[in-house]
Image 1 (tube, one colour):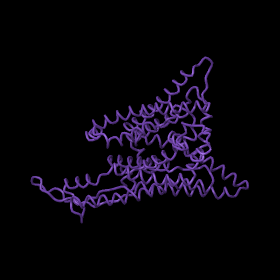
Image 2: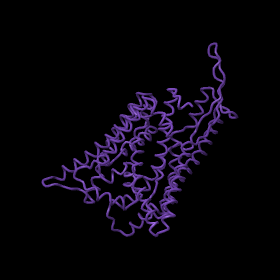
Image 3: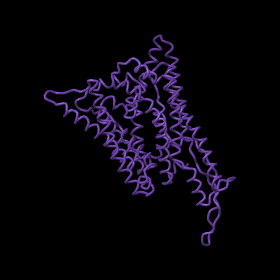
Length: 431
């Protein structure tokens, strides 16, 4: 990957795109350090640090720590991500959106416009919720003569504007930079959170050297687990099943066309990180409710406490939801009947299977098996960090969502650089 980046830097056009991308990401990190007026961030950051596994922790991870510090980009790209997921789901249910998705470039532009409008609404809802959380935790600061309404308007407007600015920055990277803009912004935020984890790890080693020998064992164990999870995520992102396809020969005018053999690639991880995001969002609801409200009932607290991030109920529910969402998401993205019909229209056949029903059944069988294998891979990547945290008794948890995003974005950027260098016949890469 480093060699790919080095070779890409030698090409002037790619170098400009890389520099532009880096500048945008630096601006993003600067925005994560600009505080919003009328807020004392220490109150909310202490609450997030006290509770793990709730929705606030997830938002803080996605925003690169900006949420806990109540800065300009506190909401991060969460409104845009949620909007994109909603539009993806509605495209299957609403015929109008389904037709737009099939209209080519113009249809995609209209869907992107609708996605932005929904993102604004979601950002406004999240900003209102965040304001009330800040108010409940006494994190608001009013100057003399300042009304609560004016402060609320400034805080909410700033959060919404910051979220929309991030969305615009992501689109600029898509147009003038390298890689997917939104993914790179999330990637940058997650990478920035590695510094506190590294500091904690160094502190563990220092404590171990001072006499607590168990920490000298835990620190290498955490590093080994981290390397294993990252390696597993790389394998998960690259693994695919290639179904052989044979196209029949046909005469077009005076020329013989077709006859070539190719393959239909189906990735093991067809749904990406979405099942993990959905599952973690649902499983974090009880912890979020417990953090948001002062629940006096002892029974209610015990029930909500069952879903603690490090508890067995959370892990089992997490696993089941990841598997269920993986099947659901793949069923939305891949239609065996449509794939079989497309092969038939283009005179393509899978050796050993007749076109039509037999081909459709075979593709459905392959998809079902790969979906299950992909779900198991996602479960391992998502749950292994939780087990590591329980074994070591530390708060260093390389979340499965974070690892999958970081690995996926890094591989995507490397592949995009390689493809652009191949188009330019870059000698250093071809060698």
